[in-house]
Length: 169
Image 1 (cartoon, rainbow, N blue to C red):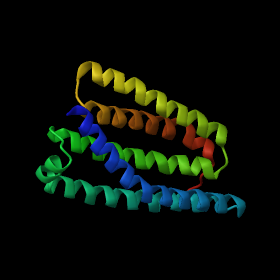
Image 2: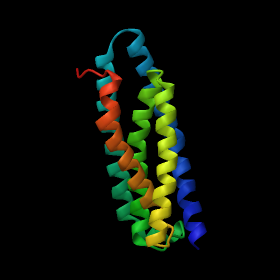
Image 3: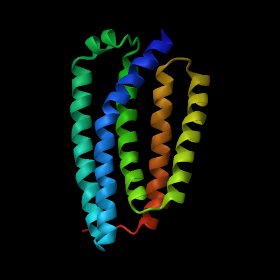
Image 4: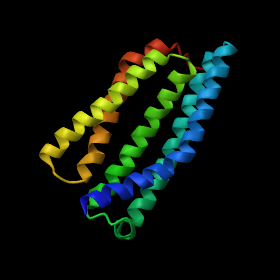
């Protein structure tokens, strides 16, 4: 039961992730263009635009998930009410972090990108172990994703954002 819940939600995550990857490639391309044309203020407008799109998409997805929660729980074979919310929240925070990573990649800061990707994987593992220790359910996996992405978002804004040379338009 627990394994099937994780599989169903991770499959759903992959399906939503495919079009998201195309959008993030566009962000990387626009970042490269802005750097080559000395238009770093364009990067800030890209961030604002895509954050707005992702937030509206998240709110629509969250509304649909709350509205049709019983159907989705039955269809995805998910037992807990909070599992779906944890999945949606982890997907949203992960999307915003992916936007940040696309900008780092567009700036060709691959060392910083690799460190950030390592921290992402390692923190997900640590948080999963911690959450599974306190709560033994598949729901804890998605809450560990949320905690990890939130921690990385704080690090990104606090330490890495000033290093990116992004000027507000």
